[in-house]
Image 1 (spheres, rainbow, N blue to C red):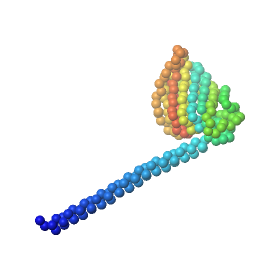
Image 2: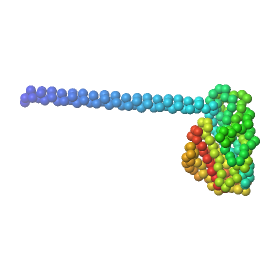
Image 3: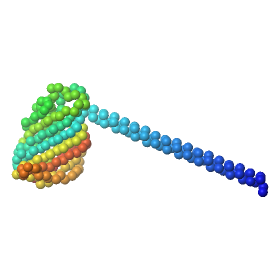
Length: 244
């Protein structure tokens, strides 16, 4: 047996194993570095995105004097000819600044008239027109405390505003709104036949859904339609249109 050959083969085997071990070490080190860098990168990116979203949301809300935490709206059409309808809104508001003395209802649209404006808290000032659209300002005797939610009630009457066979009510998001719930009640002598809600952006109108017509409990013969949405798009309009 040639000892030299055996030793030479052993050395070659050891060299090969060392190369393999070194290559494995390099691969594992690179993989560990890449994995660590990748995970840290993901976490860092997610953290920056979250921070950016928080800053954007804060700045977006701070542009407006109020944020609406909830909007509950009821439109009650009182007669079959649509001559009289009563509008009520219950809101939970939060002031985004100190010293805010008024809240403005923007863009009340009708082809009839509006009257009998009432609010609590605050005092309703005379309505004013901009571009043929009615705006109503509520003046607070004591400015709401910044960041503290409070309740507000607002109501008025529509006169000769829903007299056609196809009519609509339009909701505008002039403030950030977290949740809106709208109910339209019809008289027993003239029921709603069908209803659809649309999302309006500029001049574009997109159908959202058909709304079911639901009888009111209590045997009054009245029916209603309802629609609710969380976080409706800011500065957009939503139209509920019905045939009756």
